[in-house]
Image 1 (cartoon, helix red, strand yellow):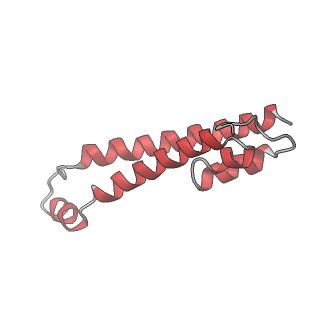
Image 2: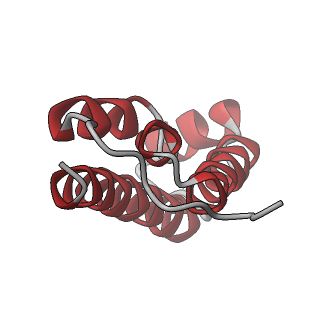
Length: 102
């Protein structure tokens, strides 16, 4: 059994992009790219998990009230930018693949 089959034909690029905008990897699954979809999905899942686990709301609020820069602000920014870039990559990839296979 192949891990990655060729993309499906008759897929709508707008639907593929929308699904990837909901969560990275869903548009690739829609296109029939299972391995690529899994890579995007689990990459985003890991980034979301790392982002959520690095947020300490009480400590963050105390830092802001004391007019201090939160200690983990750099980490939060890196994780957020990484997640946004991965999501954009997933959206563009899903739409381009769907357009190529029409």
